[in-house]
Image 1 (tube, helix red, strand yellow):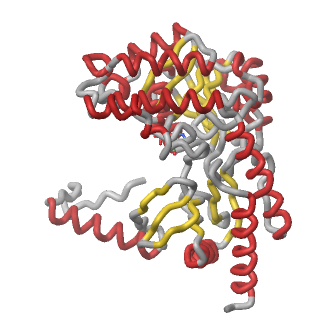
Image 2: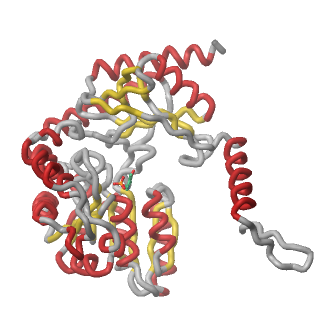
Image 3: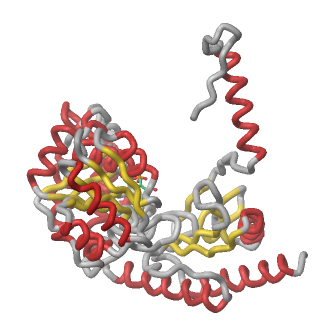
Length: 410
Ligand SMILES: Cc1ncc(COP(=O)(O)O)c(C=O)c1O
């Protein structure tokens, strides 16, 4: 509960702007004291899975450019021409911001996803917010995985229906919970990340679908880290798990494997039509820049024409997990996505190892509470198709040396 301060007469104390800023200062100091104040870095992202930080070139294991497209797709004449003609979309899609590039991209994504329709959003965050708040109405309920992305959690918290939380490692309790609470609600939904972004694991989607079907619940999957990367056709986790037909809607982002920006939802024509009419982040926000749509069309072509990129990525992912096993560190089960956590537990250790790695030429971010649970601080490797096995081997050699040095108190 928020702490309300009262004066002697029992009235809540009001604050001037100055007092309020002082309060914020105090809260920032508290974050500092807990080691949770976020610091930003300025990064020059370079082609080939590298970056420059403070003038130093590093191998970059921090980005989500899984297929190494972010630096490639802007170079095509088509994209350059669209960008030269117009930068901003100037309005929301509903008013006059939807160009031929938006239309072509929605059609191309629907073809790629093999769904009846697709609707674009300004970002993946906005897509989750829009889809959940539009579909979950008063009297409905949404079961949300405890570890879902912040955009899903926020959407579930703010939607008109009731939010219930489950854990993907305890799907029997999801089943139980649905069994007991289903009759209280009209429509019920189960929403899950396709790939959990802090550990690269995928949920047991066939089982989730089975449970949902048992209780007439509808499943929504966020494919943010799966699109372009997983599955026989590169469509993501639903493709990988062979449940595409059992899911109501798949939410995607183009900010990761597609190397650009923008969210989308892929579903049947009626669901998309409803979202087009009601999803607020899509019509109260300016549409994507047309040149971004042109660039995303390029990405889609490459993803379909060059499956070797995701095959190489899958090989690197397996190799990274083998290296973790060889180091004798705790490994996650079911890590098939190109996000590979190196679980260290202790927060200070994670930060020290990340800093030492940076000195050795590797950018590998440390992830700490509150982003992950206490005692599960980690390094998080994000792989790209530009990385080589030899780089990974050298990286793990550096990690081994640094950890040995740390354990000997050097
Ligand atoms: C699982 C997941 N969903 C949604 C998003 C939001 O996507 P975007 O960056 O396009 O807003 C992210 C971004 O980090 C994510 O990791």
